[in-house]
Image (tube, helix red, strand yellow):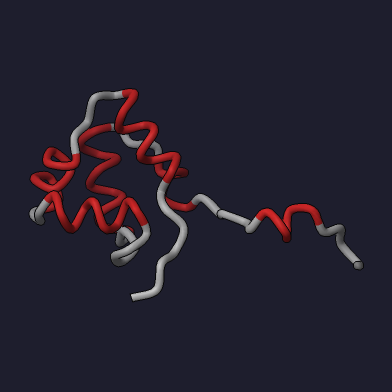
Length: 81
């Protein structure tokens, strides 16, 4: 499976709020392994329903599920080049 950008902001929020991958997995009805793959970009993205559930249960900011990761090369390019 192709690797996509990781959920860095969400991972940081989880650490800061002492939320384990196991706790997220329990809320979502899945395994910690599946959550780990989603967080690190090696599995599927979080579904909107999962984001809502984590927001409702833990107060997870919804913005973390919609982060846009732009490659460094593209960040340096200017519009119109």
